[in-house]
Image (cartoon, rainbow, N blue to C red; front, side, top):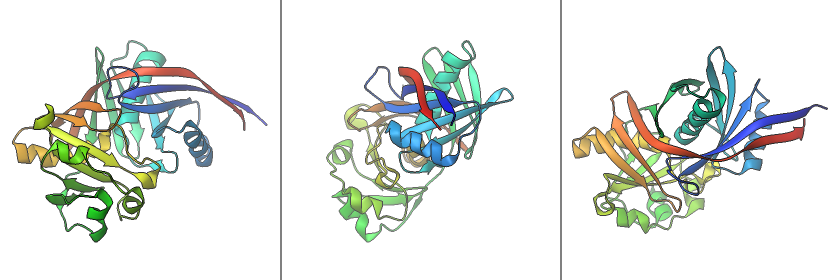
Length: 266
């Protein structure tokens, strides 16, 4: 039986201070663990997402796990992993590239602002499933679909007031549901909430992958490529979004909350 000792960090992404934004666990490995072991670590950590990094020839390979599933793309944990590499693993470096199932993702740093380009996932208008309105508890003005269903409301107050039925959301045929609205009434361009109970995340705090889906819509609707976004979760999160066509650029601060080691006998 071998004793594992894994460097571990928790970074709050899309936040300027502790106890805000979206916390990501970052595990630094010298080789991949079995998927079941990484899933167990993510479940034990209990954070929305835990990222696992393995250094490969000057860059890093990365995988993401929620408490219950391996994730296909995660913006906040990628931003958090960028903080760890650029501040702790290779201090002084200004950019890092991660090899992921979503492609090569680069994080760059300018002072305490971290910038990440995610593949754009433009939504299309769709017919709302019968259970979607019941799942949200209020009818949206329109429904779109990309990787997730996107319910568009008229103002931020409407999405702030939603009391979603998580069991009903879990029964939808997409792994998550985004509620979004213009943010003019709260001092930004886009207001958003994101629910993914099927992934073990009832409501996410601040979600990069959700904005990769909604920014193409809002960019066209508002006639601007650079937008300020705010996620209306209890922890809250802010990010600057830029529609660059094939990619959506997200820029935001990040802050370290915890560093230590995970140790157990494997």
